[in-house]
Structures are given as structure tokens and as C-alpha cells.
Length: 266
Image 1 (cartoon, rainbow, N blue to C red):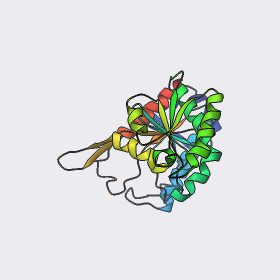
Image 2: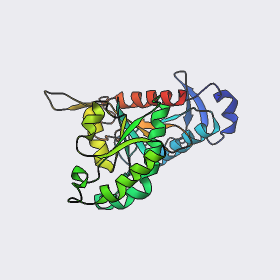
Image 3: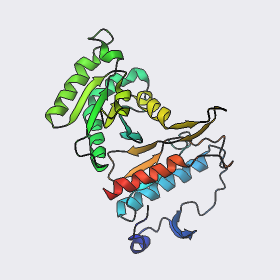
Image 4: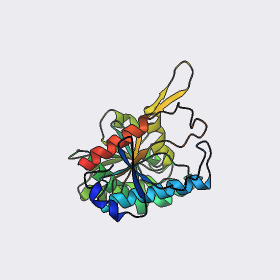
């Protein structure tokens, strides 16, 4: 997202060539034209994605750009806390890409920071006193210790400490937590692990043709929290099986750009 300072800073970025395409400013990170096919995951494509990311970060840190918005990337080619959103359904996560059995030991050291980052993001979005629900780690929040004591011994004390620090948090909340979020009883949910947070957002944000069963679009976005810059991205992968066919949906990208604009204005 280039701002009006772009022209004053072009000379400061000799690592990338500036140009114009259709009246829009762009940075060419692949002047050698590697010729990467759009339908395959390969190392050359991963390098271009990395170089593009590095260029975006430099532009944002130097003040040339107010925010960055990333498209999809292949984790096979290119290997903090995040906030995912679909309309008013906003979800932060304590853990991300780790095995389910390892989740409990990561909760305590990351809990307070992720909740604070989520609260900060909600303030940026214009919520003066955001109310955050903490999803339970175990079924029924452990059912008094019957299904595990992590919610009692770790999550509840952490929530109490956050309340003392002025955060409006409630929990641990069981399997109705996302229904209550959708009913606007909360402004966001902090989930404990990857699928607990991803599944409801992607379910609500997916558009499916009822007749054919074909998924037509995904209307949800991602914001990476805890960075010195604003970064949003699409909430889907590369989908190499449909790349280049003209049938991919742009919905998530448009919403990611809109979220970046909203956050940068705030």
C-alpha cells in the first residue's frame, strides 16, 4: 500500500526496481524472470515469495508503505500471534502449527501476550472496550477436573491476572463460545489451538454452491499481530489445482486489503 511519500524514498531502495503497470506502482523482485509455472510448488517460486515479502517489509519499515497485504504462499516452498476474521467473528490463537499433544505446555507462556495483542488489534479496529472470550482447552472446560485440569490450574488464573490488569476477558468458555461470539456477546475469541480457531471462521466465511457442492469463495482474512508494521493476508492457500484457470475467487484478498486500510487509518 504505497502512500504519497513513495516518490521521496525510491532512491533509498536500490535492492528493488520500481516501475509502473496500469498506473499502479510496483516493485520487481524477479528482474531475471525465473519463469516459475503458476501450477507448481517449487524452490524458485519460494525464493520469489521470500524476496517479495522482504521488499514489502522494507517499504513498510521505512515509511514508504502504510501497511502490507500478502497473498497466498506455499508452505512447502516458503517455510507470532494472528487474528483471523470474518465480519464480526474475530479469532486469535494461542498456538499455531504444532501437534495437538504439545498444545497444553505452550498455553501458559503465550497466553497473556496473545490476549493482549488481540485486545490491541480490537482497539485499532475501533472497539473502545473490547470483550474477549477465552475458549476452553478441554471439553466443558475440564468438567471440574474430570477431563483434565489445565483450564482450572492454568487458564483460570491467567484470566484472573488479565482482569486485574484491566482486560475484559471471560472464560474458559466451552463449546458454545463461537455461537456466543456470532451473537455478539463477545468481540473476539482467543482459541487454544489451530483447528479450534480456524474451523469456525472458515465455515462461516465459505460460500458453497448448494447444487454442485463446489466451494466458490472464502470470505475471511488474517492479520499478523505483534509486528512493528501492519500486515494482513488472505486466509487460504495457493490452490495449485485451479491456478491459472480464471476461476479462483478474489474475495479474501479484497477483504484483506480493506482490513489493512482500516488498521492503517486507525
